[in-house]
Every structure is written in structure tokens, then in C-alpha cells.
Image 1 (tube, one colour):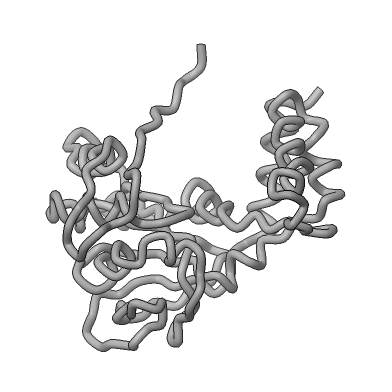
Image 2 (cartoon, helix red, strand yellow; image 1 turned 135 degrees about the vertical axis):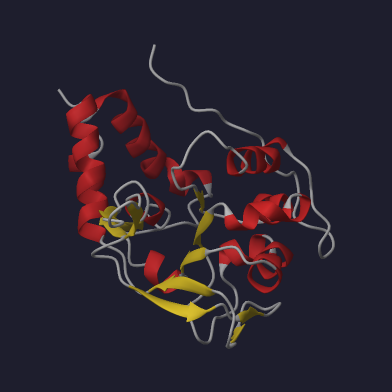
Length: 242
């Protein structure tokens, strides 16, 4: 039997009021992992959606703000920000709390960047579908998606794999030597480009008000789509292909 990945239920709703956490198994799992004392490995909490659980965990146990990095698919690009981005809109209060009231390190992958993570329908058919039961299952999820949404969703020849940067920026990051007597650092992302800026003030509509003197955060300008997609296709073939 292979290793099993633990799954914890998240919050049933978004934050109802500023600085009022929602307790859930998912929130507690973030706290427990961040407070571990039995490892020196860095912790990255990757989120391809709303930030309810992360914000709630920080409210309940503020000490964890210095113990992990948030990698978030969401929001719009600096310096303007923007309105209408889906993952920000899931819980605007949670995102505002994290940006405006905590010291949490953030790597943000904004809409313009995750929207560039395109794959063609033919690539999915050629490189995903043939690779075992998991490949066929994943491919069928794509093929059946328009019917699930009453055929309103028509992606044509391309699909956006907008959550996949969470993998290329963490599991596929390269390491930086720490120097004599210092540990390796696993926070270099080589071919994925970003700006380091003082954390801006995040407004209720998703726009930014640039600030000075705040903690530095990363806002990505591009991700390595070649590495990201090729590694995904290769892992499917190596582990599940004929």
C-alpha cells in the first residue's frame, strides 16, 4: 500500500466579519503543521482558491505567520490590482486580512500569469488520456465539463491549467546553497520570474494601494509553462503509461 495523503475538511462558508475566524479541520491542520518542531524543512501552503482557512489559522494562532509561506493563485497584478478575480472574490475579507494585517510571506500568482497556463485539447488527448486509469479519468473530466455546465462552457481548442503553478513553484523549485554552516534554501524558482515589492494594501474591490515599508512579497510575472506541463505529462507516462 502506497502512502496516503491526508485530507481535511475546510470551512463551510467565507468569513462573516473582519478578524472573526472560522474553525475547521483544515484550519487546524495548517496550525498543527506550522507549529511542528520536528523538522527544519520549509513549509509552503499552496492555495488555488479562497483564503478562508489560511486567514482563520493566522487569527487563531498568530505565531504561525513566521513559520510558512503562502503560495496563492489569485488576485491581479501589481501595482493596480483589479476587480472581479474569482479566487479573491471567494473570500475578500480573508485576502484583505492576510495582506493588510499579517506579516505572512506571500508568493502571489495573479490572473494574467495563471491565465497563460494553456494546454491544447489535442495535447490532453495525446499525453494524458492514454496513461492508465488516472489519465483516462482526468481526460474525461475535461471532455465532460461542458455538459456539466449545460454546454454554456465552451473552451474551444484550449484549456487553462491555472492551478498548476502551485506545483512548478514548490515541488519543482531549485535550491540555493546556504553557505558554510547554513542549510540549503528551497525558495529559488529559476525560470519563473517575479517582482519583490513591499506588500501593498489590498482594497475591498481587489485593487491595490501601493505602500512603502511593508514586508516584501513576491508577485509573479511569469511561470515556466514548459517545465510545468512537460513534467506533468512525463510523470503520467512514467508512472501509469503502458
